[in-house]
Amino acid sequence: MNRTFLIIVHYSDPQITLDCLDSIYKNGRNLSTIVINNSSEKLPDRINSYSHLYIINSPKNLGYASANNLGIRMALKKNARSVILLNNDTLLSNQSLPGFISYAQKSDKIGILSPKIYFAKGYEFHKTRYRKKDLGKVIWYAGGQIDWQGVYPKHRGVDKVDQGQYDRSIQTDFATGCCMLIKEKVISKIGFLDENYFLYFEDVDYSLRAVSAGFQVIYYPHYYLWHKNAGSSSGPGSSVHQYYQTRNRLYFGFKYAGIRTKAALFRESLKDLFSTGLKRKAVLDYYFQKMGKGSL
Image 1: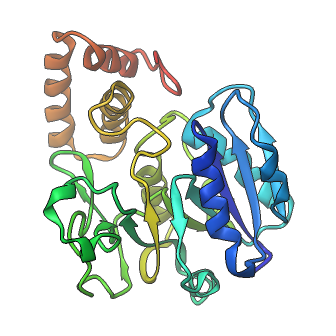
Image 2 (image 1 turned 120 degrees about the vertical axis):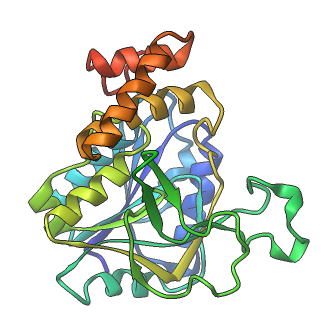
């Protein structure tokens, strides 16, 4: 257990990160955790009260991929057998995290593992759709499916109330970076997260690279947690979301999609070039390879 490191990227509201850490360390969990402070502001002093906690301070916002790579490198230097990338806007359940970790070690074929993830209460996309008793049981992720025609990653089961319909472990197209266990042997073979993305699509990209290297990406439903969706970043419809989704979808699609889909993406991008605002900027940045943080 002590050879698995949790890696959390902090950005924005310190209380969100503290709530996440509280959920990790309650019930006497003795976990090694690395927090990357991706904000220019100092973290609250209370963070020093957690045991087995390492802090990496970044002078600027490195983005999801680069910040996590910092944490992964530290974990590997400390002889980590696996790492768990965990969003800071998540809350861990009382379920068996050791069981989640040990499942990954059951087979050498398993490379990456993600659990069942629910929307945290009040963070659902469609808040008025559900009965009060269903809140906390609305699925955010129960496996990942890639729509190759549209070049969109989709969450299996999203918005559905959990009634046990996704309680079987399966191979899945992609694990979610919201909570993503990666074994050391995967990192040794395929390297780190692609820092060109900065934000969005990097988890899908990494999953495909792992599968290409012969590893399985698994959805594991017997551990679960809650996600305060977009609690630490701008959500759907925001300028941040629109820019990085547009640019990174092109990068991902031209990297992995078939020839017909690439042709369709190219035609779509030409239309966006004649639009105004962030979509145009995102397309230009892709074609001029202004990746990473880009123009935002």
